Image (cartoon, rainbow, N blue to C red; front, side, top):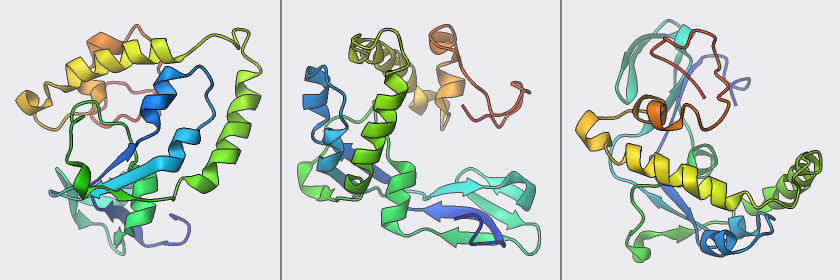
Length: 187
């Protein structure tokens, strides 16, 4: 997408919730085959849009948008379906939502076979192939849920800021930049 827009300074998309109805079944089974992606549903969320920006092209940044770009860069709006692909995530905080406002989508279906093939290649290299990763993932999810539930007290913060103490020793984190003291860090 970046290559198609040489003047892109940022990409803006609607804030969406994506949920996977098959997720509950996935948590109950040992086989990880990505079939739960077939039952994706989305809801466009009211509130500010989400922005992905390129810092070297931005002059002034505010909380949810770019206020000013270096010339000739500008913002591009991403269509809803593409935005869902970039913004899909499991939301630990809001688990009970009104079912009537979700819309089915099949945007993930075409990725299932390739995801499964790539996952099987990767997991085949792991010595503990039969080990069920879901319980470990649930433990981390609970820790993330606990620390991110405090976001209203502290305002918009990434899990990096809210959950550092809870998660620092849980895994080997890979940072996008060696300067971990920076205000802008990608995990």
